[in-house]
Amino acid sequence: MSAAPAPITHPPLTGSTRVLGTIALSSATFMNVLDTSIANVSLPAIAGDLGVSPIQGTWVITSFAVANAIAVPLTGWLTQRIGQVRLFMASVLLFVLASWLCGLAPNMTMLIAFRALQGFVAGPMIPLSQTLLLSSYPRAKSGMAMAMWSMTTLVAPVTGPLLGGWITDNFHWAWIFFINVPVGIIAAGAIWSIYHKRESVTHKLPIDAVGLTLLVIWVGSLQLMLDKGKELDWFASPQIVTFAVLAVVGFAFFLAWELTEDHPVVDLSLFKDRNFWAGALITAVAYSLFFGNVVLLPLWLQQYMGYTATQAGMVMAPVGLLAIVVSPMVGLTVNRADPRLYATFSFTVFALVLWMRSHFNTQADLGTIMIPTIIQGVATATFFIPLVTITLSGIEPSRLPAASGLSNFMRITAGAMGTSISTTLWDHRSALHHAQLAEHITTGNPVAMQALGGLQASGLTEQQALGMVNNLVTQQAFMLSVSEVFLGSALLFLCLIGLVWIAKRPHGHAPAGAADAAH
Image (cartoon, rainbow, N blue to C red; front, side, top):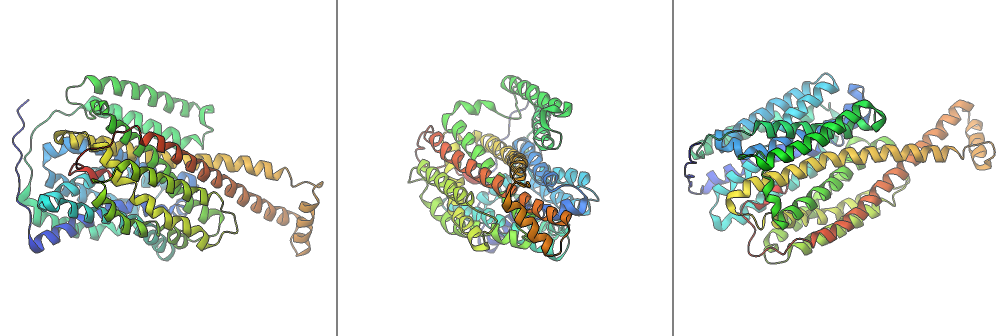
């Protein structure tokens, strides 16, 4: 193998060119991050239109996330083979194409396939957008560059549910994907005009094809097991058992191969660093809890509380309000303060928010439901930046891309798993609560008989009255179930605080590339 050529250092951009470059890169990042949340409130509409259950509709989210997770570790290798500007341009344009195909999808199978394609081609976009942005600014202003980049990734999740809900209610869900087309094309044109002369050097490296294949097998099998389990009665199904065996065996072979490969697709030796493994593990578990609940709340509101997609989006949107205000302060102080304190505070607030949600009932009004979402913004702002600082604090600069890719892979995969696990638990526990509540609807229960009598007296037949009572029981069952998921998640966030203090306090400043795991 030939030696790697020396990297080229380009001078920072200046004036209006730097402003335009920042806007163009931020637009591409915005488009990408937007697509992780815009579909959340549209799931019931998509599922209904394509003839599947809303639970099956969560594949629209998980297929994107899993494919994205698999692609992220390849970014470093592809950058050296293709060049960071050309790779970024390819990522943006292929993302636009995949978005267009998602909007045209005639059934759920095709939509999931196109969402997986969209997630895969999006893999290099976020790390490279930050790399290019950092190269546009003098090193003294890198903090400002990262603050601006972080603002984009905070505004997008706020805008996603609102925009997704409004589009779904007023147009057609396909437009949540079609809107990427003009944004991506304009951003790609601006980026190419500014950055095409600032290409990085390329270098041929062997690809770890075996490692990549094993990665796809075990991650894909694990996600299929989690997603299909609730439909196929888990391990009573031979199909689920097959997926489980493939996931376990694939993971074992993957570990064995990557630990002995000269050019592994995933550098597992990074786990020798205590802060890396602790930080990456904490981030992954916390993000799975966070993202699972972010998906679950709008599903519950739309299916069992009578909310429209727009109203569900309004409930989710305020999470970014305080985050936008607090994040710059965290970014400016995280290198002087102990980031473990920030992470502890974040998890305490997350636990408080989820504890408040666990006390919701079917009479909760919009204001009551929105209050925890507003508070959650503080937790979000103090979550990502400190944990990334901890995770990458002991990594030498030459290994930062690999470390960032691996921690991102763990986070994104965990987010997809969190979605599957939370919706499965919600479905399973609601069936249990429905059975328990239905046991009380008997002729020996005077309250139940009085309620049925009153409904029949209002003009309903006996069957219609029983159907209405059953609907009320179902609503209560799903409310009790979602409360349990919220409370369980709150307790897990509190447990994570102990893990935070296993990490050592980072010394000095966080690496310049630290923030790329933030979203």
